[in-house]
Length: 461
Image (cartoon, rainbow, N blue to C red; front, side, top):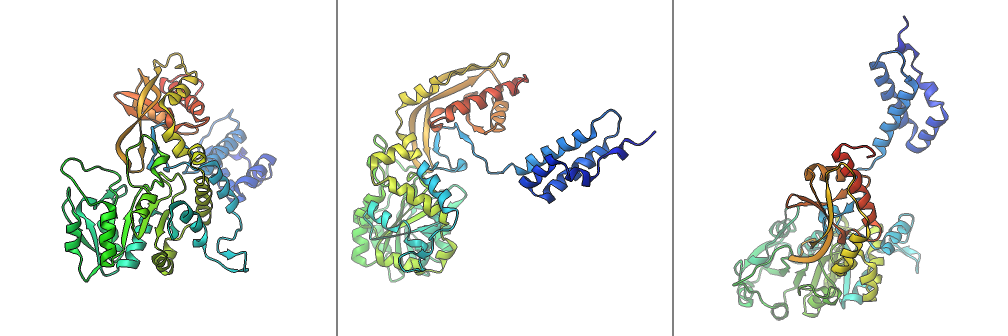
């Protein structure tokens, strides 16, 4: 009897097939050749008559190519109810920002002055807009807020003391700690006051010849309540000004103005901080601002000019597509009502709970037969996320699924196309519709329905 493996097609014949030619155009010849080789190896390992070896090889290669082409970074549906979800990319960009990124992906005047035809600076982009919106004298953009704080410390207080209240020595996600940032940036941390109470007199007593900077840090991801106090920003700014020491304020999430989020707890804002007299304010671009990941520094023109000359800025420089998205986002803030409508993070945070509940109910959702699941629309609580407004719950609504193995259901949703990320709470799987804007609610319902079928072992997944 002849060996079935001898009847396998040759690599050369496979590469000449029209359908394989289409794969080569999409994936590249060497990638396709490798996938076909794997398919041939698999067919050789499986002997037996009556098999369509060609179809088997092509099917295996096609599956291999599809798996290789699947990006590790995928678009996902956020059903967690956390608007600025750090693990899901924080603020989703406005349509204007996405379009601007796509436009900037080609050639552009990122470091070219169109007026003179000479080399320009990427740090000129967004600077005027930031000054217009915040009242600052100058501004500069880095790749994130940690870089912004590090740059400020390195330029202004290298080998000098940085005064920070003990109650503000924060750690945020990814083990980002203020003491470590100060030390790695070349400053000497000088702790002031106590964990729960720091007075302006504590700062005054700590100031000496070696003092280079007073750093105020907003503890955005926790709250100190009860017997607690710290000096008003205006008082601290007056002390810094009187003693000739720069005052920097790390606002973290960086809300431009409190009026943008009516009904939310009061907290520091960029405009308020600069109006209070701080020399430099730093904040994130991808949190409450609703833009791309960036670190923004605004304030005194002389200090900003020094930051622009610091060699570290090249390591912290921002990409052209980020600048484009940030500029498009900032332009929306020229009209606060427009910003509230067009910037997804603001729109989601401001949406009335009744509207969220109506959107959840508008998606006609029935659990698949045989799944054993019960699905209902219910009120729930969402969160801001991104370290903003800790402990503040936003009334929200979504779907609650019971009667199933919630861990298996959550895993099946994460394996969906696109992945749907929900949360498990009180032995139920919950999908919060507040963080599913526009048409995402209907897409999420479809992913959830398919996941329930797979979880129940039914057909049609």
